[in-house]
Image (tube, rainbow, N blue to C red; front, side):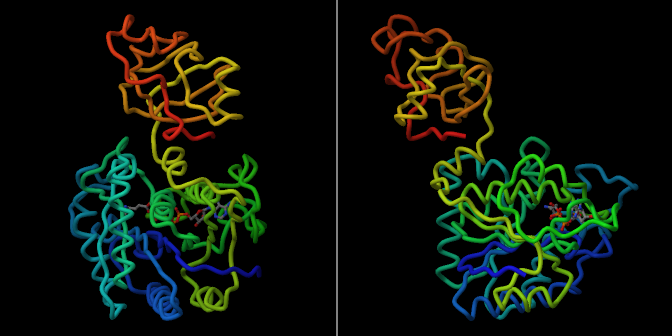
Length: 365
Ligand SMILES: Nc1ncnc2c1ncn2[C@@H]1O[C@H](COP(=O)(O)OP(=O)(O)O)[C@@H](O)[C@H]1O
Ligand SMILES: N[C@@H](CCC(=O)OP(=O)(O)O)C(=O)O
């Protein structure tokens, strides 16, 4: 078992632990997790919970056919969220705070900063934040969609050093152990590449959402941001004894040595690009080697229908190498590509400055 240390952790608890029978909230596995959280806090550590289970917890209250509709699931989440919060709070004699977030909250820079400030204030006041996706308002494209990735965003926004994903399996195996009983546990992952993603299968229970793939995605985001991720089996009490003893009874994903800044994390992981800008070799070199802003003179093509303020991928030979916030719309960039700033007024009737994407709003991939 490898050793680890941490100071501020996001602990993600999956639906399989909140609602093991799949249709109501259970306390069965929460006692050991709650004890771990309480003892960690007594050691001066800070914890944020990301808890799934609202849909499963509310399932028995909302009438539905075998496959509930989106509205039925949202109604289940609205009911189940109350039960899930109640279930957690009875284990703690300090206050808990409900934090319901959507993808849009992470995507919008000012909302992102507001989440950061709120979480900091809650932690400063010894309150335990309990985060879930706001399932009632978020559907499909507006959703993070799974709580593993939500937990990674939460870890970034909270500036945590550790993400602990508690699932119903001991960690990452070299194959889905429910399908292949010979599968072996992988204790440490130093580098998350395609071969690691290939190991991942889907969810193991009726209530799980993303399976191992979304856990690897979460670990990948966190690693780039300098955050270590552990996947452990939250249904085994002894796992938490080991964690309290600084041992890892599961899989540890080692974080990058030169992590991204907070702004780079936000640009890379939470913004969805709505367009693509193709640039020439000189512009690519300037962005990568000298840390320059992207100027329209180096742009050779524009794809998509974005407006100023939208995120775009910056590509050379169609391969994305950076992401940033465009200062001009797609139509205007198309008109001024290949030109210097003195020509912008003549061509589009205004100028928002010489850069198409400013260095401060650009991250290399
Ligand atoms: N390579 C793998 N290693 C471990 N578990 C895997 C793997 N591939 C798929 N799984 C499945 O992922 C499941 C955990 O994901 P999921 O059901 O979404 O749980 P949670 O509700 O905790 O998010 C496990 O029960 C297991 O069946
Ligand atoms: N927001 C949903 C979370 C769904 C989800 O990601 O579940 P899981 O794969 O168990 O973490 C809920 O509370 O039911």
